[in-house]
Image (cartoon, rainbow, N blue to C red; front, top):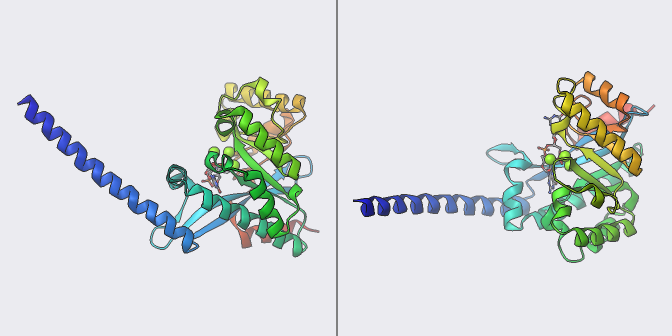
Length: 279
Ligand code: C2E
Ligand code: MG
Ligand code: MG
Ligand code: MG
């Protein structure tokens, strides 16, 4: 009986696995088609300087405009894109599109801005990736100093010497680097001083419960002073309330990004916001 039961269990298990594998294959196919059909788009979220109160940068955030399901957020498809390697061509598209958009805004006479692009580990590890970034900049006629690449701590920690080499190659081109989701990825503080980065982005999880959570406030102000002492700029992500802005300002944070100031916006809306700033 036990044997039979076991056999049944195995059967159930395999059927479920087969169904799941099929499901995955379908969406992998869908992802591939989405790229070919140009169903991806970028939204842009402003980053504001606490010193000047002005927008100085925009983070490009990927969206999938699905013909049936509507707009799909990156959390729902980036893991699969990474697993299947599709993140490489998708990431190329993101980089090219973000650079092209920024160049168009520059040509339209909008105030100077930096565009920040998220990079996945798979992309970053591609052979000669820095040269590919340089090629995109050349193709889109964008000066390297207007591009910032966001790397996560876990991406860097997977292979510290390799990552540092690629980071130096990117630095040599003139591109700026930021560490995204800082504080969540166990990067050693001694390694941090060897990374040629310009900015730390304090992870949203530390910001959310300010000013209710004293520990989060302590962590956030510690990251800010660490950044200051290392000569790095520091931005807080996920800033939603006035109280958070006040705390961050008081703690010496340079910049903020979050719903308090603006949600990520379609390009046209971002352009309107940016032009309204000009005086
Ligand atoms: P991230 O790079 O840390 O981006 C910040 C995320 O926080 C964005 O989510 C943004 O919409 C959200 N956010 C910003 N302000 C607030 C706020 O005040 N409150 C709350 N609750 N959320 C806020 P999104 O756009 O869903 O992106 C999620 C993640 O997907 C990104 O996290 C990034 O890791 C990844 N991602 C997005 N676009 C790309 C891309 O082009 N390539 C790669 N490799 N990853 C991407
Ligand atoms: Mg980011
Ligand atoms: Mg982040
Ligand atoms: Mg994140």
